[in-house]
Image (cartoon, rainbow, N blue to C red):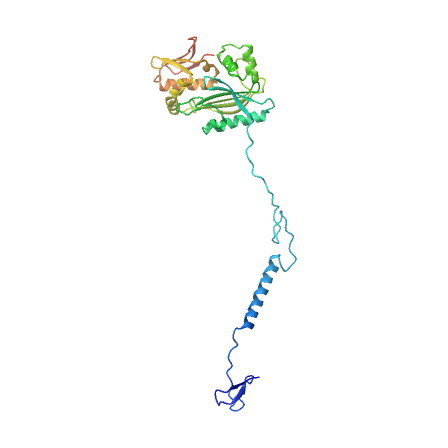
Length: 318
């Protein structure tokens, strides 16, 4: 016990006394300072609060809820978490360019074990590359170098599994033949896929197997895609007008006379689908012969293969 002085009478008073024994005045005691006791109390409060928070979260201070990859740590169970690997497009089957004919026509050689589904995937891959002007990334050489529509303005591709029939010599024999021969039959029967793309006439076609007037493909024919030219005369005219140089460069149109009223075409004409021939007649007649009559002739034999009458009638002679 310690003694202190009363501020009123100056007498000695115990520090524990509530009042002065001499004058009776109530003593004013200083509030306790926030010393080590206060700090200890504050620390205990913080620890208790932390323990309480851990108990409510289920990790520390209570029995934890089992946590697995397929469960949430919360009280409400969630749907299982399924880790799905990022899907990447299936790769195209292996192939190589085996033959070429006048640059625009190619043969691709695939492995003998290549399945029908893989051929279909290759056709769609060619289409995607052609429409994004990236056929060069697939190793397809330029078919219309320097053309107004880029290096692949016109592309005609046959896909085969037989290296002999896919060669340049075999392809040339097929393309130069007017009538169905044994070789033509063998070639057509060996084609497992065909892809035609032309920015000149806005034509795209792909199929499993092949349709030909020379022979019937052994591969069951199935159309994979078909994009036709719009019927708008203005768009057809604009397309053909911008593409006349490419038609000449590709060899499809060999020459023209009488202000485009007579056009001579290469044998490639016979390989084109009927709709493509009609689109060429429509475009050339509307844009270059000023809507007048048009005669299309075989550039080698001179025989008439198509015409547009002055009254607007279109004719294709098979």
